[in-house]
Length: 196
Image 1 (cartoon, one colour):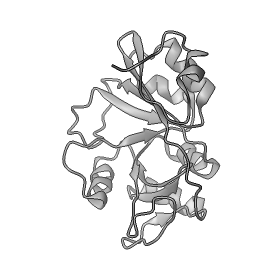
Image 2: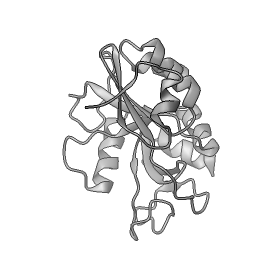
Image 3: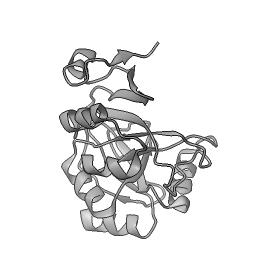
Image 4: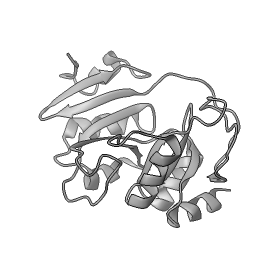
């Protein structure tokens, strides 16, 4: 099953992958045609950027402009897991996550889902967006009308959202408290603040 999904991504197709608590559409983050298709499947409005998932902390070095030590420490502490980092993208990257190439910051995390990590490590960074299919449940593959390749591991547990932390210049701000608390974050990055 994993091999078929990896092959489909390498062909520039959109697939469906499990994260911790939801299934997502996923594709090669560097394939403009695939990212456009991902947004079409969801009927997204123009200008909405997909998130990115990576298979290890080291990948951040090539994607992020001015990666701070504190951000790296947060990733090392809480990845894989429910920590989303909103970071300045490396301006030399040739990608368009659905924002028309105007994006300054992008959202990235490393999911705690072994089968999906196996896929990412074979393909490189993936663009993702929730696959709320017919029936409206992101925790279960209800229908697959477009006959996409699916890494179906059955029903996922409903669980908390990811905590979102943004790097704003030298500062770190918590945009959303989810699975990881502010107290937990401060054990690693003491100066982190809740966004105003």
